[in-house]
Image 1 (cartoon, rainbow, N blue to C red):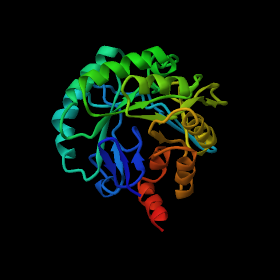
Image 2: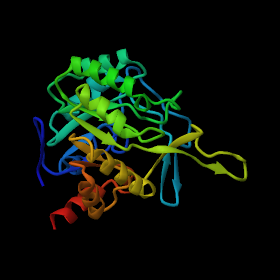
Image 3: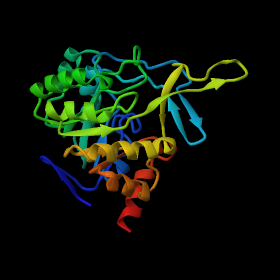
Length: 278
């Protein structure tokens, strides 16, 4: 099941998606068996995240509004990153900026030997002004990816969105400006209401929908891009079983990212890996 992309070897096609498996310093027995882990998003300054509640379970998925809670780049580098040096898999850091400059600062700070690469978070729906995500603007995608590319030779993943944009356009922009792989589809916009209080349930009002509900659309997006672009694709969206993984690979992905399934069962990756090996 080994996958080789550019200068990296993945022992299997399974990645742990950003935001669903912490910063990589826990559950090492799971992490070390995967092809890689992508940490939760890291920003310049510490973020406390959105008000609670942040998670709401829907009939076939999860709405989340975490809001990029993280310790900030300085604390991450001094207190977390040293613990990750002995990971036996590929370590990717998800970086989230609010400007081109912030992305380049983060890329520069993380151009260190301990990590395999960076995932440029262009599509988090749970932050202020997120009605206009960077990944909804191909020119901005091009600008950010090109700027980060100039600051690091690390493996670069552009995490895009399928929210109100044809991801083929932004995928092309990312590839043309130095991305080594693209990741799709992240979450889709969502909202839920409490009919008794007549108010939104999530503290952040809106959230990102993930889980089995979005899998057919995610598969379509991967297949759609594969018809036009020869770029490594990390597919994600409702992966819960080995058959789900196989579907994403058939659609055109080289790697898959397990996301909301980790929130249901942190050992899901091991179970899927065992099913694939059998």
